[in-house]
Length: 147
Image (cartoon, rainbow, N blue to C red):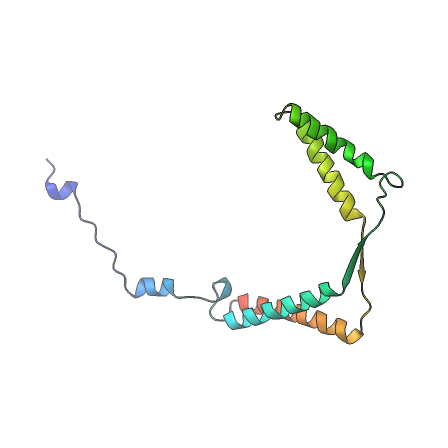
């Protein structure tokens, strides 16, 4: 026969001592000791370098050149047919495929017709931008490295 003590065992409460204090202690980035200041400084350098690099880039668009000159209207056909099918029946698999495919064709067409140029600048500025960006990434990686 079970006694009262066998059925309802008392559970020892967990004591909050030094064991949990060590687990709760803040560690640096990536769980490494220290390095938070180094990581933040590297992040600031990488952001500054990345901004300066991206600030020197011009992006323009060219003509839509899929299957000949000025064929943007042809790329709209699958999208329009797919949308029409979806308005008729929202569960139409063909409608979803045509609408999704048409949207992808238009998105890829826009990206493929972009022309990207790096503006003229001095060699000193280019070296400064690249050193800031690469140095910042290096400092961030160093802060994450375990000693």
